[in-house]
Each structure stands twice: as structure tokens, then as C-alpha cells.
Length: 135
Image (cartoon, rainbow, N blue to C red; front, side, top):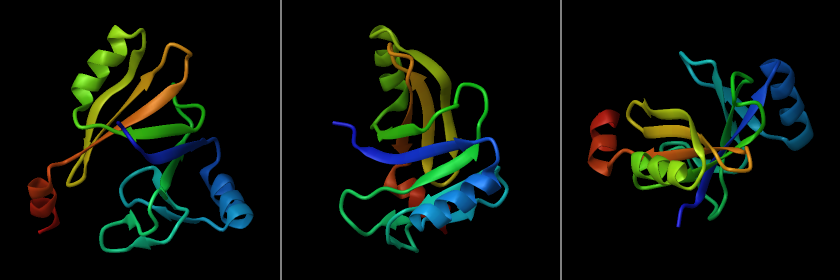
């Protein structure tokens, strides 16, 4: 079973959205160096791993509204993005963005379900590759 591990909020004006969520919900929003992307911290986390410390809690991201990513996205952890995208297509969904790598962390992709909802997929790098990237 794929668990929900991340969410993303697209924004027309990221600074306005950042200020809104910081003030309305008390979220910490940190820019990601070298990317037009912000990490959204909604719950206490282990600063060394970036993982939430409360079971079942997730953090997310914020990026520019662009292309087919126009509404909030729920991201699900899967063991094999390529296999999951093949299944999505067999079941009437479509690939919005194929598998892409975030170096040292893992892979992501986006798909559209038959109801026209865009969802995200996440596949972690194997632990040994994550350890090598951290060195």
C-alpha cells in the first residue's frame, strides 16, 4: 500500500502564498537552493534527515503554478515509479511528468487519474545510494 508522504501547493505568487501559510497556519517555508521550490514544514522534523518526527505527519512543498500542476498535489510513496506509471496507464490514467531524479534523495513523477486529478509519486533511492550521496 502506498502511503501519502508529501504534498505540494502551486502558487501564482510564491511570496504571497508563503506569507499566507506562515501567518495563517504557522508553517515554516524554506527555499530550496538552486530551485524555484520551497519546502513546507508543517510538523516537527529531524533536521538531519528532514523526516517528520511525529508518526503519520508529512511535510510538503510549494512551487510556481505551471503547466498541468495547477491544484494541490498529494504524493504517494511507491517502490517502483516506472511500474506504477505503467499500471496507471493500463487503468485509464495518464503520465503528466515522467520519472525525474532529485540527486541523493530519490525520484518523482506526476500522473493524472481517470477523474482528471493530478497526483504525485515518490520512489526513495536505495539506502546505500542515499548514504553515498550524503558523504
